[in-house]
Figure 1: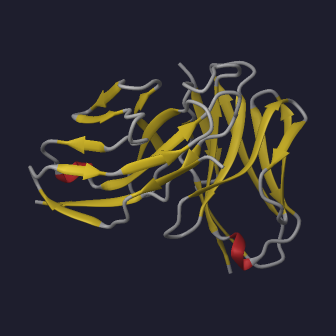
Figure 2 (figure 1 turned 45 degrees about the vertical axis):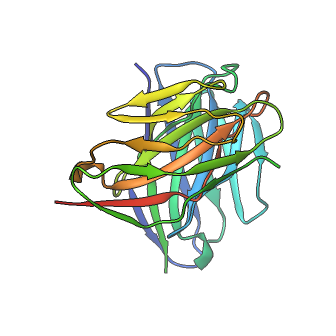
Length: 115
Length: 112
């Protein structure tokens, strides 16, 4: 069966510090990969998605970036965190070519607090 | 653009009460529709889905029917339990689009 791992589960970082969140998927090949953010009391915002190694699409311009160095690895980064980067970050995967009826499968999330 | 509108919460119910969470959508083309549930401190779990008009998705006592004529996908459960306390998200995905578009989420609290 497929599993998705995200780490760390929680993170407290000072303003201006760098960020690296990692996500890996097991049990499937060539997945679509996604990073979503959930700000406190708000819905889910798609940040990035990837349909293959090195292929990253950004939905919202901001000081975050994403990379996909391996087929089942997706990394979210920032060079300098802002207070507004605080939130709950969720990684997800879906079947490549699965069509519109293919759901996204989410990890357990990373709670990021920027102080 | 494609979007989902959910009823605003929070919703507070007593155990064994009937739950309805309204969801309507706007989409170009024919979307697939999903309900996700998020328990406190966790990620999102797929609750149910429907991929074409008049389909009914069901899971764990929850049901939702894809109504094309009213562009709706309301979530219902006949008798809620305390363990159903969570945030519920309605979402859609259209053909040839990689992303899932979510509603704002509805927080449901069930009291014993």
